[in-house]
Image (cartoon, rainbow, N blue to C red; front, side):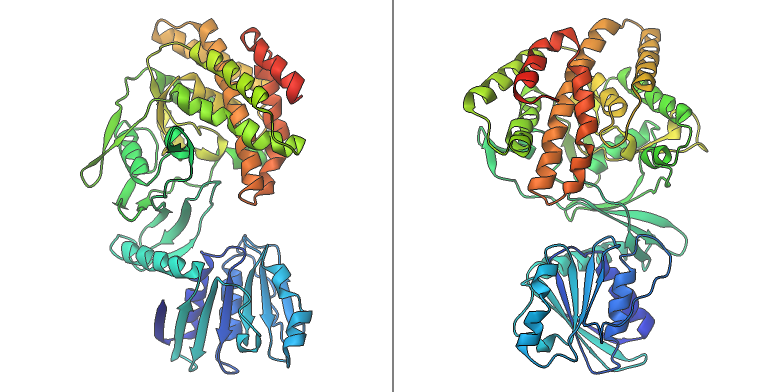
Length: 498
């Protein structure tokens, strides 16, 4: 794929570099070619600044003399290389450039001195001209091919919206494959959600991939349908301003930056926000929820039942991923069979109930405080796409046993009691049975998350999630103290002591 940009001023070229930095990830390479003074270093500096974690200026020296300059304190680490003074392939070999690619993106000036391409996933950028008449030729290879196709699709989508021509910048991501950007137009600033439909993964059971069994959203239509419905009920989910379901793109309302997890980290008083978030769950529990919703463009999104098969495939993540992490070996078939049988009995004991919409990730990274709004609308809710029809205790578990931040047990107990009081005031409510199911689903969620965090580390190269394992283990241990979970507690004590 070849893209040409003609007659660019230096600021416009630097803006292009910052835009491309939105796609940075380790293992990619950018080859910058051009005569002395063409603007290669200016392009590299703009790209690097686009990856900065804050707005502070920092020095980006030319690597003309050092040859290799590393930048580790960025959203994605970058290694900036200048080969101008290199005279042989042997000198290139001495730099050991391949070692940097595992953890960094690499920008290489004078790449023609490389004996071979440093990465199969490289973007060649040739710069000619000067002043306000620079011409750029972009040639893609490997992962850069689909990356630039996606970038062109996003630009086309944005340019048909109310933020056409707006400046795109990185917005916080998460553990999923979704991407977010902030798009600042002349009058409005919106968030771009980039969520292309993902292909089915490998078959794991009964001819189906994990995502199908666990009822995970496979495209942006889930977000659009769920959010539109909740927005019309006056919950504070991001409003959908524009959506292209086929391309997996949407422009949504930004809900500010008062994220619960950030507020907690800054030591803010969370008494009122946490109670307000419980109010939302109590209100949701009192409603009757549809099993399908319309999606912009004429389609429908079906909300699956959070059934036994889904919850069992989730707890199976523990023997599949967490056990090998802890024990450096795979569990035996007898151990796995016993584990599965225990869970089947526990989950089947929950029995029938009036299902409610269960968001599954109702916790501090996905809750925002909007004190300028009234009532339930003071709580902003994001990440709704994996909504299922489930038990009302599940989202309360997600909030009170937050995998990302410590929730004091005393605070969690007080909020649990507050929730039960709200539900009792609504009508018939069995607090003892609710408490039992809360413990079961709390153990199920903690078990699943231990497996997910181990998988993120091993499969996806994100070891940072292992930092949360002690916290999740504490939650699991507490849930196992419920008398109805005695058999599961014994299994853990015998096989995976917490």
